[in-house]
Image 1 (cartoon, rainbow, N blue to C red):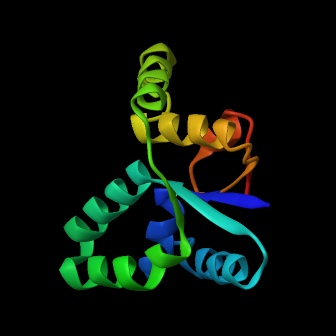
Image 2 (cartoon, one colour; image 1 turned 135 degrees about the vertical axis):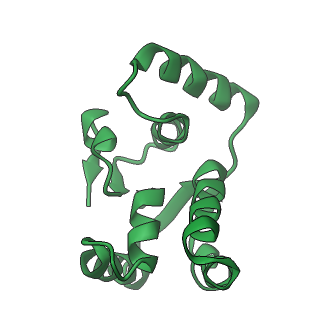
Length: 131
């Protein structure tokens, strides 16, 4: 079984001031202790690194890259997957999911992943089970 991990969950694991921090850390370590394969697209990795860098600095980025990223199976986005996601984004409207979310949804569909570790309502709106 696989679980997709979103930027919202990764940030919550790192941010002790996040209201979801404790639950996020428990879920993260629970996934690591289980047989679950943890997956994220390279777009989630880029978004996470950018936000960690802006909010917390390079030492936190380094912790993510050395301590957390090795446990994540990175799904690299192809040109065709990117194009499908851009089309979904353009069709979604002003308050719809971000491009990274649209890439995540298409990645999950292609890899037949039904569950996401996230704190983003767009995943449940798109029909995925959220942890």
